[in-house]
Image (cartoon, rainbow, N blue to C red; front, side, top):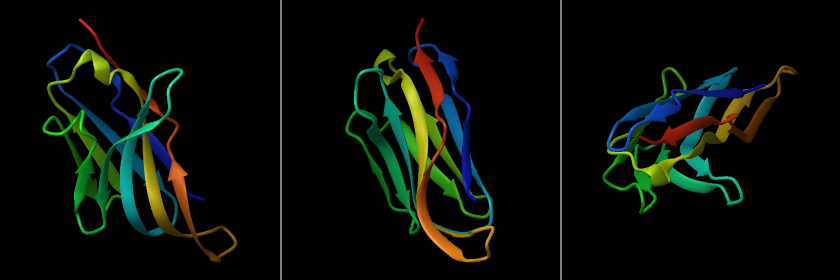
Length: 125
């Protein structure tokens, strides 16, 4: 099966930078799109950024100009570069791989979306 593992979260001061990474393991042929979401306790999970197979990106209004999403298809990796962070960016960040074409253990091809376990980002002085 496919598993996503995020890394790079932690404590950062306002105005600082942080880079999140998410790697997908398994027998993966293709990932249609990657996205990063974030969630604050008691609130819905919101999409932060998305990048398609063609490299086209979309960002939430609150992070435009500060965050950059990128993908490395050779390594099945997605990154989120977070610059000029604000206390309001504090959340658990999740990566999402959409339209994953993979080979299952049974040998039959599968298509599905997958989520990582989340990584905490705290912006505080």
